[in-house]
Image 1 (cartoon, rainbow, N blue to C red):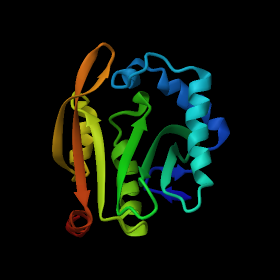
Image 2: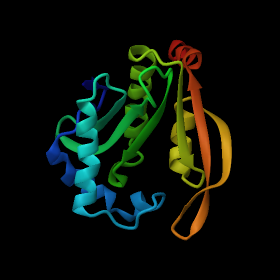
Image 3: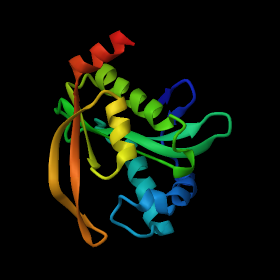
Image 4: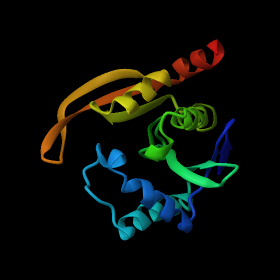
Length: 183
């Protein structure tokens, strides 16, 4: 599977991608809202392999793609849509971006392409995303995408010695179509 945007290529993961993922997975800015303090080479290789294995599922229900800058072929993150099962009409959006590439609009561009794929190719009715409430960059991104906050789960996650609130965002197919038509 391959998706292209104005400035990005969203492609399937390959085994060699682990090195680029390893670099940003160990950036303190990336690690702030995850439950791990450090990622080993083995952790990251297994992370990338999971996405490679999902490519072989039939029927496929998980689409996690590498975000790549086409001119340099540099992997800068990933974005995906994950259905819980084959018959589901909803799925979860997930993404991560190398902190060195933050504030360039890449995450918005990649997530928009994935929403388009979800609603127009997979014909989903609903897409949701969960985010740690303190992660203001990710909250802004979801709102920029046109997703609505549907829930606030108090002290829903525990990591790094404390409880964290989680926000749930959602978008319906009709809202996506309205957004596209109004642009």
